[in-house]
Length: 273
Image (cartoon, rainbow, N blue to C red; front, side, top):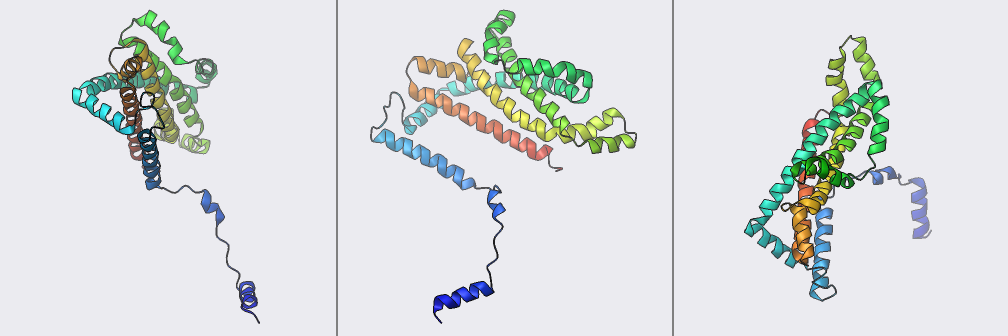
């Protein structure tokens, strides 16, 4: 009997168990892959700039951008522009979030608010909020209130939708059980509805934070002398593309920082899960 026949006979007698192939669809953390992809992209960019494949006028090399960012930090302009943008983002985000939480909770809990509010939200949410900035300038002037109102309005609608949807996802069996124990409505809202809706609300915070970052740059490009958006616009007008990309890098780092803060908040607020 040949060796192949013997192996075939052993395989038939002792079939190898099939692995659980569904495990391939389960996401597993790969922290090194993200860093490897980022570093690889930067190295390719640097190599293309070094051999002259890309023009330094239109796409400066990563080391030129890093030097521009370093000069910006040493001159103190980075802190000045960053402070102006952060104040606008924080102010507009807090105003829009508080208003959105109140409106979303009302829509999620009260039938009359849902019937009256949902059509208005659906009609106004698709409007590009930056298009309303000239109107806000007419109402509030060219100063900070117009920019804060633009950011707050952009943050308001995703917060309303996330809050109302989060409340809708709370299991009704839990609410009925609380009602069967004669728990008052405000206690049910505080102990069951809002904690159950919190994952959806926090997901909405991620979207609203990104919208606030986009809107502050757009608002600063239209009417501001300080801020990352104003700095990028000035650098673009002067063809200082290394400084322009340095401003873009600052925005990217700012987005990463906001995402890290929201992740930490999620871990702390949802530690009960």
